[in-house]
Length: 57
Image 1 (cartoon, rainbow, N blue to C red):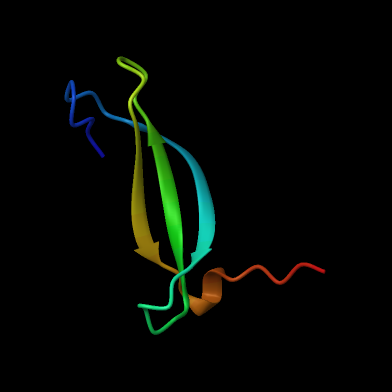
Image 2 (cartoon, rainbow, N blue to C red; image 1 turned 135 degrees about the horizontal axis):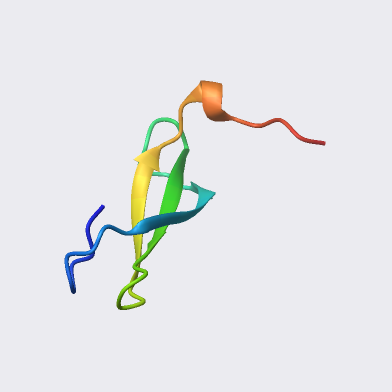
């Protein structure tokens, strides 16, 4: 992902599952990206696949 402010390639900083009633899977992954040049932070939503679910207790 390129920074919309300066065009620098952004670093993938974190991923977080988020509940979303508008998708059939019920959850999406918010991928957080950080620009090392200007400091802009962007989030990108991706569908959560069943194989990516981490069952922790």
